[in-house]
Amino acid sequence: MQFCELIHIFFTRLKHIHNKFWMHTFFIFTKIWVITMNKYLAEFLGTFWLVFGGCGSAVLAAAFPELGIGFLGVAFAFGLTVLTGAYAFGHISGAHFNPAVSVGLWVGGRLEAKDLAPYIISQVIGATFAAFVLYIIVQGQAGFTGTGGFATNGYAELSPNHFSIASAFLIEVVLTAIFLIIILLSTHKNAPAGFAPIAIGLTLTVIHLISIPVTNTSVNPARSTGVAFFAETAALSQLWLFWVAPILGAIIGAIIYKVVASEKS
Image 1: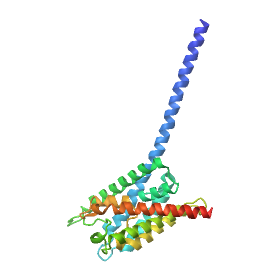
Image 2: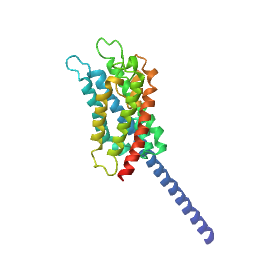
Image 3: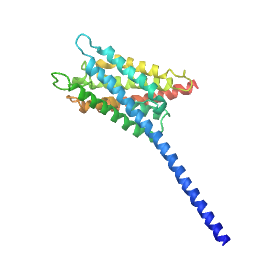
Image 4: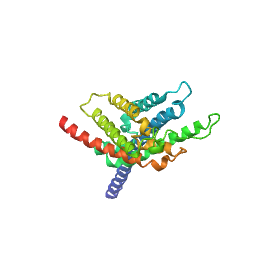
């Protein structure tokens, strides 16, 4: 009888331990899932803010009669959205807000391969949702006749100053490469702490000041994709360039960073 009781106690405790193990495992995986989803949500929100703030300023405020903010205002709007977004979301996801940046950081060894696709998907969804909200807003204007170019990127006839496809491709590659070099070096472990968002935001401002007349400035495939869905132009047919050129530029920038950083260390 005593032996049977011991066996019963043993299996009761074993079941208790088993249940505790699975409960503990469940909580661990739930915590990991929440943390992971937080990263993707941060990328969604940050990209939404970038497109809504940057493209919104271009669509709603750039050409406002007598008081429009013009190229300079749009350039600062894009730079400031990245600056503020980086401070807000940087500690959660790294504040990429851009598929080209995610690819560049992956090449540069700053992003795990498993996160690359979810980051890009989150960014494109965030950009598209921002463009959709803008689309609803512009329809509320008295005398609304259509979205027109809707802050899209383009070359040839869709370029603000009708630059060729070669010029558009080259400037997007070069500026995205520079962007990635500055992002990677300003966030390097030896760089001054806390100043990276300022450097990155100001860099994006300068990038826009240079290239708005050429392509309306992309360096960000998600930004280009979101607004292209709602434009009344052939922007979707030219979208390939604003994926290929920025990603190529990001890879080049990451490779240059590796050379410079290795020499620095």
